[in-house]
Length: 214
Length: 214
DNA sequence: CCAAAAGTGTTAGTGATACACCCATGT
DNA sequence: ACATGGGTGTATCACTAACACTTTTGG
Image (cartoon, rainbow over all chains, first blue to last red; front, side, top):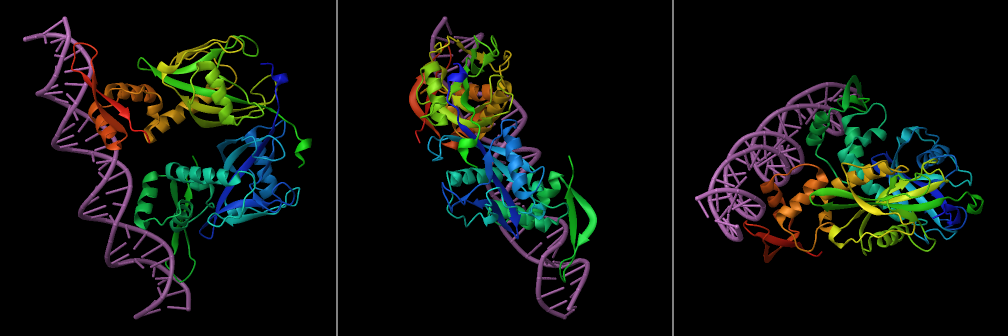
């Protein structure tokens, strides 16, 4: 029971970073330049430093990658199968991250692995067990959006109800009824109706909304 | 990025083991005989061995403690705050475990730490961050029992509808309506009505049910 | 015939779903 | 005046919640 006699393992974090871009649900992936899984795509993440909590670790990695601070994070779970990483025993803790793509400027990481948005319906081959982690993250996102107000994390400061509905549809992967959607949003009482409107073409201008800050 | 240059940490598993005993929701705790947190209570668990997955690790520990095989397990999440364990950096993965108390024979573990059932509403002082882990586990259990068929894991092979309702009430911490409960169970189509009945006193005998195997 | 737990249906309310037309604007 | 996306209400259905009496047994 003396921990000093016990094995130690590597600890990493991985982030399943979603955004909605032009009506499509996107996930952030990096292309690996070195083995293992050279050339394959992987979730952004990295090793946990001794002086940081798990969530702090993934936040740091994400800020390096996206230059966005205070990213919304929720834990998905731990993945620690014996052979999930050929380099040795690595236990990773995965996080769901939501981001407004307007704020992101994608950076090259320390290994110059380029981060890019990928359509969730058209994923490349993935390294490690990241396909499983993504599937779990997507399930969690879909659950959360129907039960909490996480959509806020993806929207810009001001948006129209059509924008918001498009985000919901991208995440859920299905069309929603316009009137029912707007009714529910009204009932939820999380939106603040602004006096401003936005005009995009030769149409009726759309009312802008923002989220009520808790 | 070379993992060989990275720090390694201890990896443990902890189990939030629930059962229902005489109408009360109980959790399995061990009393710690040695520091840190000597004399305090803690979740059963232990270090992850190099050749086992996380779930295999917690299953092994639980089998040692309870002599029950094939315990129902679902991951709660990872807990890895820097200072959660004074002995060093320890990242634990917590699991929700459900058990039919009839099958359990509580054993002394290797350190002769005695495992005992504790009423969920009357918990002693807990070691580490185990109070937080228990709170998360209870939340998950309550969510699961309302959305899936996990109650099966706690019930014996044959049981009455009143038994089953008592289990639900113990887990949810509230009384349920008898007629509505029975109606919902009928609609869920997971119960098999047996021809047998059970008689306990000078009352009408109660019909026995079992769960339909998948 | 009494005590005690088993068993059984109906009603009202609430939330979800389906559905079609008018509005405001720029060109 | 037309094309385009913005905006609105009602009716039905399904699910949830509230509620009280009869049945079967042993003593």
